[in-house]
Amino acid sequence: MALDLEAKIQLVKRPPTEEILVEDELRKLLEEKKHPEHYIGIEISGKLHLGTLFLNGFKINDFLKAGFNCKVLLADWHSYINNKLGGDWERIKKASEYYRKAFEFFCPGVKTLLGSELYHHNDEYWKDLIRFCKKITLARNVRCLTIMGRSEKDKLDFSQYLYPPMQATDVKYLGKDIAHGGMDQRKVHVLCREVFPKLGWPKPIAVHHHLLIGLSEPPRAESKEERVIAAKMSKSKPWTCIFIHDSKEEIRQKLIKAWCPPREAEFNPVLEILKYVIFHEREEFELRREKKYGGPKRFSSYEEVERAYRKGEIHPQDLKLSVAEVLDEIVAPIRKFFEKSPNSKLLEIFEEK
Image (cartoon, rainbow, N blue to C red; front, side, top):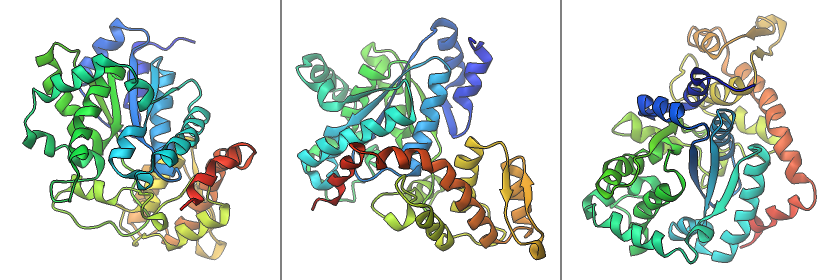
């Protein structure tokens, strides 16, 4: 059944979306185009976790349901520039196939494309990259380095300064209607919206989704935005991640150790998983606990759980164990997909030194 305009807009706005730049433009786009173009770029690094595959994938699936033509750019050259997998091109190339398989399984109907495929024999891309660079200052470019988890305080090689304008030029070629990413990609998308009209290029609508935080206590930062980015689930800190390959027991043990202060909901990673993963996939959540502590209880919304937790009606340990049980059920299909041969061989790349 074809969706009406309002249903499509609600799919785009659905969590984990946090921001649309801007909704009026989205409405006009959907009024004029039946199948707009959507794109998201993904760096190739370590094993996939909930933040990379699930939150990106949930949002991609919403766009697919809304009728968008969705593309995932497997950003192999960006990964090389950003020293992912040790800057080893052969490892990045092999890992790209693993990412391709994961996103095509998790997001049926999505198209995947390697950065090296986009750039090969594409003279116009490189001309447009220079054209874009002519419209920005070095200082403006430096402010966008946070999209790759870097800043001017880091010791960078020159190629890393090419990362933001390359990503902006990717948007021109792949995301002329919708540029999609996590909140950490906001700066480059805002730059695209500022610069593209000066070049006569279509101004993309930007959609940014929530960044799932890691399981450890979040670091302090000067602003909430900086804290969110610093706290996000990261493969470089494996003890803070739930990987899509983690066994039921590994998920349970990681959540038992997770930072989950009583009565505190903000920046609580266990509640985050409940909100952005479990309630995305389930209409209700059962808190499993012994009868002497109140017995099992069902909740029909995340807000109900949060209110009860803030009041001290839910013990952190009961929350952790209950979340672990349901999360394992949600992770199981993708985990099983990669346990089957020949998909299991794709993981060997991460065992190489």
